[in-house]
Image (cartoon, rainbow, N blue to C red; front, side, top):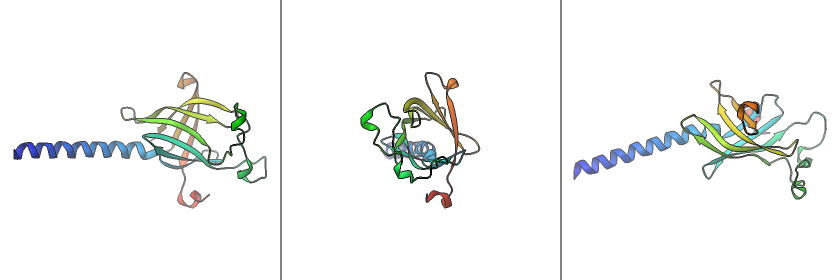
Length: 156
């Protein structure tokens, strides 16, 4: 009886450790990330085992207006054109693939064109994010690099 209890305790501890390790790996992309051009910050977060990303800051050098006054005017759905870009989810439905260490099967919304593409994310060895938007095939897609926002910049 003692051996069975010990075995069950050992197996449940191993399972818990494995689950916690997987969650730590998958949650690595959570946080604020700034684009390579330093003109966009997206906050990646986890909701119901899926990863999403919303716009929390951007800079439009051609316009000198408050970022709260930008709307989703390129959206093909007229009823959504009054949504503010600030706070808009641009990444949806990403799921962590523990075998590849990537986040796959999501979508990315391009607010400049109003189009939705398939998306995938990988965390590079230099700790930058590579976010790829694509149609049908990843190798045809377009990628952007992001670096984690440091604490001083995160207050934007």
